[in-house]
Image (cartoon, rainbow, N blue to C red; front, side, top):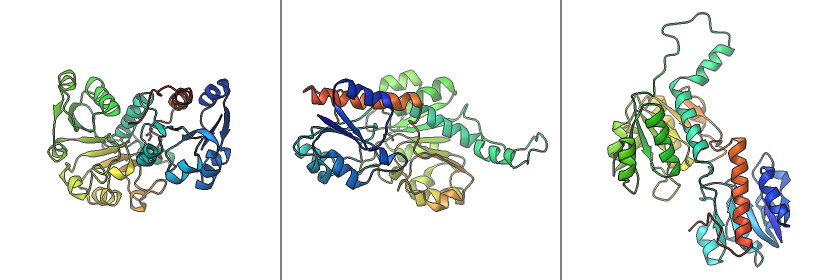
Length: 322
Ligand code: GLV
């Protein structure tokens, strides 16, 4: 049985598959770029499993190219908006993701962005390298504290909850949240306050951090109107999916001072970034790397491999996407 992997991934995942006796074909050509559709169509032919990543749209055409051998599509990500779930269901294909193993790393990256933008780390680094550090200055590069501030968590899943944990227990922040579901245990543990409507939460926050999946209901959740509901002193952080923010509206809001700053890891049209954002100093940008630590990417590769092994051995994989 052959397994096709659309991009090179950490070796530990590949090893688990090879140790089980599977033939593993890795699309080595796509090391530093997205895989071509043609490469995927050719690679998936006669494969029992497709291990995909989020740079690829896995559609009905790809699923049909793998028919009848293809049983499972294992996405190396917690998000799975790149996979046509309806088409997979119609073809009886299992789809899996990699939740849990990346929770802490993404929460850490969320704080890396919050701290970097609040303490003006990128600006300060540029300033120092440019030889502009002439003397310690009482007014030099003043930023903003996290301690004592209010964080609004939008989406209280695994990652949102971990961010809330660090905020409340580590940084001395007050936590507000909005989600489709109210969680009273969470509220008790973190002294957190629930808002059913995001419009009521936004004006109360010094930081807003987005942790929702990309759905039709969350596309452009942060549009111009909602950006204007935020405090002018507030920061917006996004480690979820780019299209959750209207990127043009974000550029406008940062340049007009409707909000103070932003920390952004995901973009509306990846890998493109709205050019107006690149001109601004009050935003810190990272290229969709919130889960990118050596440890976590290895765990993701191993979990994707385990999902494939379970599916091919006729059991229900641990991370079957419903
Ligand atoms: C990354 O964005 C993921 O969904 O795991």
